[in-house]
Amino acid sequence: MRWFRKDRPLEVWETDVQPAGNIAAAQRIREICIAAGAMAGRVATLQGRKAETEKGAEAERYQAAIKCALEIAMKMSDDAVRDVSVSQIIRLCVKANHLKTAKVLLRAIQSGGTRAELIMENPVLTDQDAAS
Figure 1 (cartoon, helix red, strand yellow):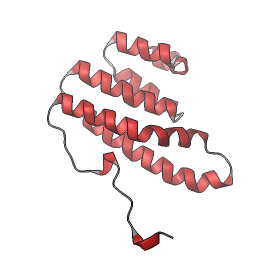
Figure 2 (cartoon, helix red, strand yellow; figure 1 turned 90 degrees about the horizontal axis):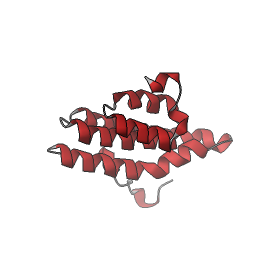
Figure 3 (tube, one colour; figure 1 turned 90 degrees about the vertical axis):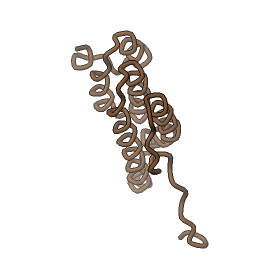
Figure 4 (cartoon, one colour; figure 1 turned 45 degrees about the vertical axis):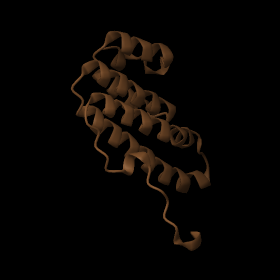
């Protein structure tokens, strides 16, 4: 029960702000990843009966954050800025233990240096699928 029927404040990814330009888009993605970071940690660590209900709500919010960040990243025209933004999203996926999504996104990074840095930071991303 919510006291005084207060609605929760909107999350960063729930606002209708559309960034203009690559730098603004990168900053927005960074804000989304920072805001969803704590949530990703909880999604990865919740266990037990209580986790089923809490994890559902947290997982939905986390998925909404990832979806919004990816939609913004797809609209970016600068490859280098997009690679850095996608790498932030990958780090968020790894934190939430969503390795399948992280490995798919790793293939989208065009810069070999950025890809190597991510693999060095997160050795769980190395396997036959991520190496190609």
